[in-house]
Length: 165
Image 1 (cartoon, rainbow, N blue to C red):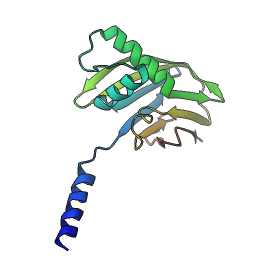
Image 2 (cartoon, rainbow, N blue to C red):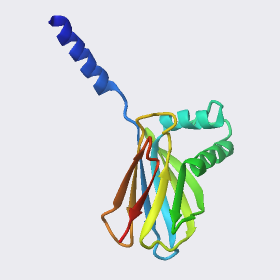
Image 3 (cartoon, one colour):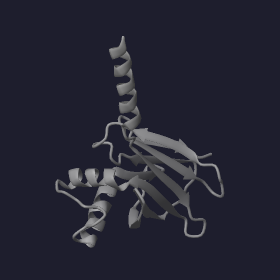
């Protein structure tokens, strides 16, 4: 019986110490420019794994040998793993840049001017190939709304559509 308790305590510690894999993305439309302004927060150490796997080479996100190359590698990765469609048309996205904040990095993305009406389809497969429990939360704010409509994307459901009515 004592072994059972020791096993249960050990299992509990393993569950509690296991890392979680999550990203947060916010999408807002600038009322003046009509561009989508996107901010995505991703843990940089997990992103190193994803970038290294995607580009088939070791990548040091915090101390890159070539910062311009890192910018291009991040942009290529995000173009493949983060996409938006409005009215069945893919929206052109441009990575403006990123900044590191403690254990995560914020990525700033902007779209061409678009007409955001009734729905938006989002693909966010960031890190899903590398971490099977990865969860990507996407908040979409329409107009001046302070309350977002949200998606929770993960393995098996990397893409979903939101009605914005």
